[in-house]
Amino acid sequence: MAATFRRRLQRGAASTAVAALVLAALTASQAPGATGDAAAKRQPSPPPADVPIDGGSGYYTDLPPLNSPVPPQGSPRNGQGPATGRGPAKAGLPATVLAAYKKAASTIGTADPGCRLPWQLLAGIGKVESGQARGGAVDAEGTTLRPILGPQLNGRGFARITDTDNGRYDGDLTHDRAVGPMQFIPSTWSTGGPDGSGWGADGNGDGKKDPHNVFDAALAAGGYLCAGGRDLTAQDDLDRAILGYNHSEEYLRTVLSWYAFYRNGTHEVPDGKGVLPVHRDAGRHDDNGGRSEGRRHHGHGGKPDKGPRPGGSGKPGKGHKPGKGQQHDPGKPGRPDGTGPTPGGTEPPSQKPTPTPEPPTGPAHPTALVRVGDKDLSTTAGTEFATSPQVRAQDAEGKAVAGTPVRFTLPAATDARFPGDATAVTVKTDKNGLATAPTLRAGDRTGAFRIRVTTVAHTAPAVELGATVKARPAPKADKLARTSDKELTATAGKAFAEDAVEIKATYQDKIAAGVAVTATMVTDDPKQPVENDKGPYFKDPEATGAAKHKPVRTLTGLTTDADGLLKLPKIYTDAHPGTFLLRLTTADGAVLTVKLKVAAAAGS
Image 1 (cartoon, rainbow, N blue to C red):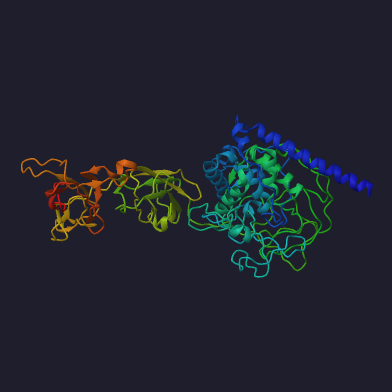
Image 2: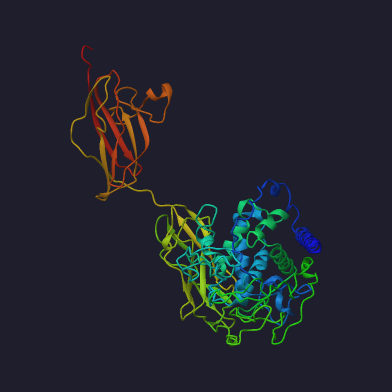
C-alpha cells in the first residue's frame, strides 16, 4: 500500500510539472505585455462547477506525434489555405472545423480581448472531445453529418444527469448525453451559463444555437473558457478553464499537449479527411451514445502515461502489446462515424466493421466572390434598401458555382438589419451562382458602412459591399390652422386655459407629422412684427429656481405629432390688458397668427 501511495504522489507531481512546463512554453511565445498590468487586473475565474461541461464523459487520449508538425510541401503554415500535398496526418485540421475555431477566437478576441483566447486551444479541446468532429465529417454549414453523442449520463462511471431537454439535442428521454463537436451537456448548452441563459451560441450567423454545429459549438466553448474574467495566458486561469471541461489531470495534460502541438504549426485538409483518434478514456462515443467497456487507456498504451513534454516532444509511457485479434493501429485514422475498434480489446463478434463513407460530394468550391452592380447601396434612415446585397460565386475559370452557402454580415457600426432583426444571414447561390441577401432595412443611424460577404467554408476571399444611410428629409408643412375657432381670453395676471392653443400642420392637404414649429409673442406692427416685451408669455419647462418664473416669449423645438397636431404649453399673462398676437411659423414659410385677448383685472 505504501508503494502504491507513493507512486500516486509522484504521478500527481509529474502532472503538475508537465502542465507548468507546457504553459511556460506557451506563454513565452505570446506577444510582449500579454501578462502585464491589464491581465493582472482581471478577476480570476471561479473554480470548476461540480458537473463539468462534458459531464465527465470519456475523451480521446491519443497524444501528438513526437516531432513538431511540418506542413505539406507547397501549403502554408497554420491553416492559412488548403493543403496541396501529403503531410503529417495529425497536424492536418479539417477546413470547416479550422475555420470555426479561428472565427470563434476572432469573435471573442473582439468582445473580450483580455481573455487572449488562441484558436489552437479550441483545437486541442476539439481533438480530445470529438476528434475534430470525427475528422471533419460536417456539411458546408458546419453541422455534423451524424450526431456525435456521448455515453448516457446515468451515474455509472459518469455524472448522473436525468433528461433536461426532452431529447431535443441527444435523442434521450431518460438521461442527458454530451452532444456535438465540443461535447456540451444539453442543460449546460441551454441554461448553464452565468445568467441562466446557457452557454449556447450562434457562431455561423444563421439565427440558431445548435450544439451539433461546429461554428456554434466552438464559439460557445470559447465563451466558457473566457468566463469569469479569465486571462488564458495565466496558468491558474488556463488550468481552471480546461479542467472545467473535464475535471481530470490527465485530461488537462492531454489538451495542453495538443494545444502546444497545434501552436507549432498546422495545415488545412479537406473536410472528412482528418485523422480520427483511436484511444478513448473510460468508454467511447457512438451514434447511440453507448459505452464500450474495456481497459482504461491513456496515451498510446494500456498504462497511465508519464505525460508529454511541451510541444508534443514528450515520450509516452510504455504500453501493452496488442492482444490476439487487436488489429488496429493507434497511428492510423479511425472511422469517421466514430465506431473505431474497442479500446483495449477486440470488436464484438456480432458487430461488422462499418465501411468508411465517401466524403460528401456537394457543390464545387468557388475561388472568388464578385460583387454584382457598380454602385454602392443607398437609402434614407428608416427605409428599406431598394436593391438587396448580391454577389456571384465563381470558380477559377470564371464559371458560376451553384449551391454555395454565402454569409452576409453587418458591422457593429450600423443599426441596419436583415429580417428578424438579424445582423448576419446565410443564403445559397442559385443556378447562376448568385447569392442575394434578404431585404435590408436601414435604422436611424446615418452614414456609410461595409457589408462583409464570405463563403461559409472560407474557400474564397471575402468581399465587402458599400452601403450608405442618408438622413431623412425634414418634414414639410405649407399650412398651419387652429383646431378650434373659440375666442382665446384671459384676465391680466391669470393664465389662459390649459392647452388653449392647438394647431394642425398639413403639406399639400396631407397630415404633416414631425414638423418643427416656432411660437413667438409679437407686436402688432404690420410691417415688421418683433418679439413683444409685455403681455402673454410662456415659462421655460426646464428652468429651475427663480428662472422658472421668468417670462419666455419665444419657444423653439416644438414638433407636430404623428397626426400633425401640436398643443402649445400653458400661456400666462402679466398686468397688461389688451389684444396681443401669437405668431406660429415653420421653416417652409407656413405662418399662423392667433389673437390673445387679456381683460383688465377687477379694480385696476
